[in-house]
Amino acid sequence: MSSRTSASSETAATSGTTGGSSPLVEKLGLLRSHIALVGRAVVAFSGGADSALVARVTTDVLGPELVLCVTAVSPSLAPEELADCEALAREWGLRWRTVSTGELDDERYAANDSDRCYHCKASLLSALTPLAVAESAVVLLGVNLDDLGDHRPGQRAASERGARFPLVTAGLTKDDVRAISRQLGLRTWDKPAAACLASRVPYGTPVTLGTLTTVSAAESALRALGFRQLRVRHYGDLARIELDGADLVDAVQRRHEVVAAVRGAGYRYVTLDLEGFRSGNLNFAVTGGPSGAAIVSGDATGES
Image 1 (tube, helix red, strand yellow):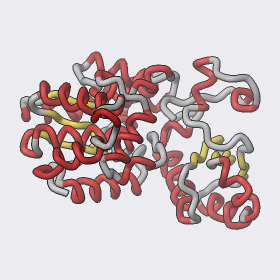
Image 2 (cartoon, one colour):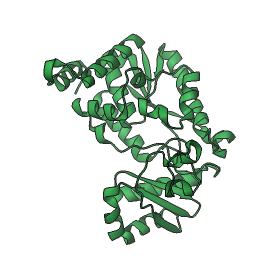
Image 3 (cartoon, helix red, strand yellow):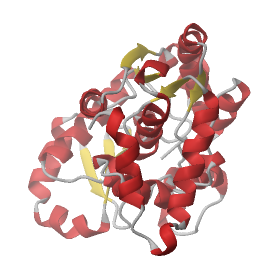
Image 4 (tube, rainbow, N blue to C red):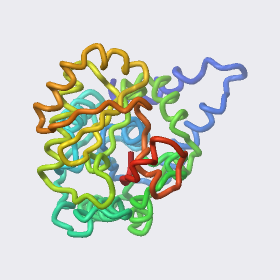
């Protein structure tokens, strides 16, 4: 679908409500209005549901000539995510490019304390800001209202450097993002959350290229087995697998395949977390999250 027809498609997708309006229609209208005021934009485009909605709507509103969608490439980005960003850019007619970020070169990032994500976003903005200056544009990030309630120091780094959060300004929650994306026909509406690979490493455990490579290989192998929503939490030579609750029985029944896949990535011990996938659960050590098994391990990471 071209950007020339997207505005009419948005109207059609959200017009089937009583009285011609609904909270989602109003929020989409607010999002479009806020973006229109930006004028020119550089969108940090990771390919997830949030940044995808921002990239698509911003391009639809302003036109591709005024919007540059940028994917930051580093060892913390899973190869599948980069490939999907390229595919989405092609499908949606986005003006898209990649930029390399060097967060692993920052000792503060590699040390992996509770502010790791601050240094990560600082690196991202350092890469995006020159592009925004060249474009006379504003940097937009796909942060939603729900993100504000978790431990996300990266948001502080982005705000300090002048980035804007249009989803927050328009009052969109994660559920809103998915619902609006579905109404607009965006295939990212139900895409599993995919935070940076460093989020699999407990705070205090250094983030290294080797660790990120191992985590990426293990998660790719599990996706090849058909599991969609997952995390491989890294504890040295032990992997703690989080899967969607509906997949736990299947994982146990196919345990030999699961073990082989994760061991093939370099882990010696393979464990399955019976609580299932919990986005951001490693932040409980920082936020004082729910009691129980999720916090007993005393680990935490930055995003999810």
